[in-house]
Image 1 (cartoon, rainbow, N blue to C red):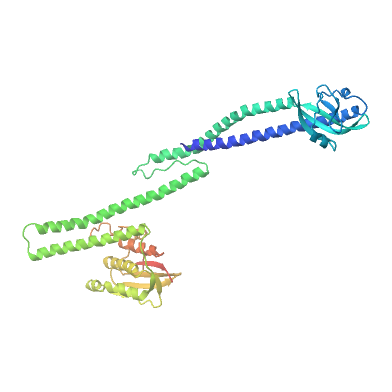
Image 2 (tube, rainbow, N blue to C red):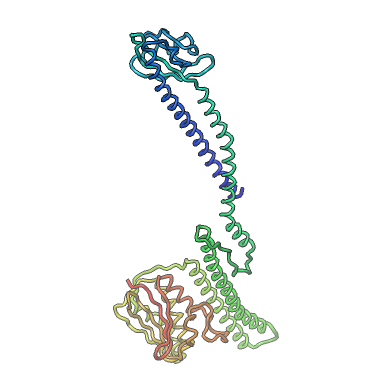
Length: 439
């Protein structure tokens, strides 16, 4: 069932209850008002009749329904319409001896409202009873009830129609947004929902959904770029691996040629393995599930350990490694993850920089910064803002070597520790560092 129908039914139900309650209250108030008016009239007429019966007959009062009763309830005088039977019962007579009493009785199919009060008639104590027919009262109430029975459903119908129109008008922007959203396709991520100009709940909902679509569009673009770049990175080593194996299987080769082919295939397999591990780190980082197990770390020891891993390679390339002792710099982090991030930075410096690679740590503004710098030409200025994006290289023409994920992984590890990653050109080359909260 559409929401506008549900809202209309709920509104109709509430209105029906309210109109019924209002009708009942109105009927009671009108009845009480009519009774009060009748009682006021009976009081005035009783005063006039009391003055007459003190020295004359009751018929002189002109009252259609009147009686004079003795104190024990016997009829002493009566008008024609009142008849010969007492208008009051014994209980009402007893109450009337002490003061005014309002009562009701029936004579000849006519309902009467009575006022009884103690008087003196012919010099003796008596009870004067004056009555008023309730026919007009009943007619007025019947007319009111007929009006409520006709006007109530009509008012309910009109209110329901207005409620339906208002609900439909209020929900029309939602239906418009729904139809627009239903027409979206995966290829149309730039489409947005139509938002009403009013700054109400629906307008805010539309703007919130469009903001969510903006975030999804960014995520889709990032995922598509990730898949495209990953496919490109996987294609190159797979093609080389396939070529090496196919060449090894063709014709006759010497032992050295076969060893060279297998060695090249092993290198590409190793590259594929590293790429798969790097992609797994990136994927876990995107999901916020990159596990870290922090523990106290001496910065100097960490830098020396990372430098030791690259000592042989650096010596072969004639590149000195200079880890700074960084005494007294202690921070909490996952040793394996931080070592992985620093290893990526050192590998990047060895691969693209020149001269000495320096590893250092220092405390600054409540954080610990772990720096890796070189003496090369540094980063191109337009590369620094996107240095930590995935599959980004300073030399886009390069297809062999790194995957363009080293700095991105370092940034992901820093983020997992609540830190940040930075890159800049120093006085003598590139400087890349991760900033982590200090203990």
